[in-house]
Amino acid sequence: MIEAYIYSIAYIASNWVSVPRPLIALLSIWPPLWLLLGGALMGPLSDTIGRKRSLYISLIMYIIGSMGLIFSINYVILLISLAILMLAVGGEYNTVMISAHEYFPSGIRSRIVYLILNFTNLGGALATALVLINISSMILQKLALGLTILIVIPILYLLRSLIPESPYWLRARRLPYDNSRFDLIKNRNSNITIRLPSLTTRIAIGGLIGWSYTTGFTLLVLTFGPYYFPNLTNWLIFAFSISSLISGIAIGMLADTISRKSLLLLSSIGSLITSMLILLLIRSLINAQYIFWILFILFSILINTYFLTEDTLKSEYWVTRRRGSYTAIVRVISLGGSIPVIFLSSYLPVSSYLILAAVIFSVGFAASLTWYLIGVETGRGISIGAWEHGKQ
Image (cartoon, rainbow, N blue to C red):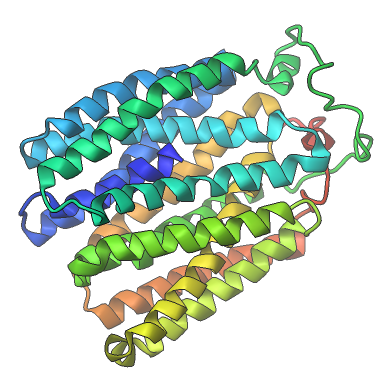
């Protein structure tokens, strides 16, 4: 939850200071830049020191960043505070993604991973709700958002102190672990062995589907408001977060019974079609906002399903001893590739902006189709141990 909460703050903060449009664009690319750096740092570190230990490091950065956010008095301090928070988020999110696959038996693994990832939508809803309910004062907004993080930190510390180290990581490092607490070996698909596509193929597919989601989601949900409709910024994020949270619960409960490849393909097609409808109808949608909101909520449900599936896929199809590092690599590709697009798109007219978004989703569809044709099934109760025999 805290990941989406902090990510949303960066875009809500565009209303806190009066800046020229190019600097609004800088604030828009700030989150993916520091998410990228956080993942690049913590991915390899989690493979080296363990999943649990790496999660503690982010808590210190949360405290520093939250204090800076509360006391930010100008644009520079705001950027520095957000950078520290996003660095923590980028590292933590990478570790949470990979750990979720390693803590649960294969029969419920997909369901748990989807629900954990979907819970991030609650953070976006909470962040925007705190702004929408009140609070016209920018000082009170910063206090509400910053103090909420500080309140959550002790809870996170307590929860992490109760969680043992990943048994898959301990086994990969040949360290002792108590398998009686995590029955990861005895399951209905434990004897299946799967040969994955090449490492290059998996990195390319993971990078492209991640880039398509990150860039497309940012353009249509996060920066669409600040760039063109500032008064709707908070409502767009709130509507997306609530509709995604509710629909994601239903999708998550079915995740162990649905083909991962099929769900990735179908959600990518749906995201592309709805983005094209918004593009084609944008002029009439301005005068008929109820139609826009129906399309936007439908888009939110589809793109959230795509997010849950692509994040699950690109963090699972690696061997355990390198899962943190390779997940970080594909996230660097997806986040790094989104930065120039998000920045340059701020200078486009709204029609060209929406055309660009549709093109981005078409790339995601092409990558999803490629994986559907040449990839392997990683859902439906299949254990991540099925490809643990591989070198990469």
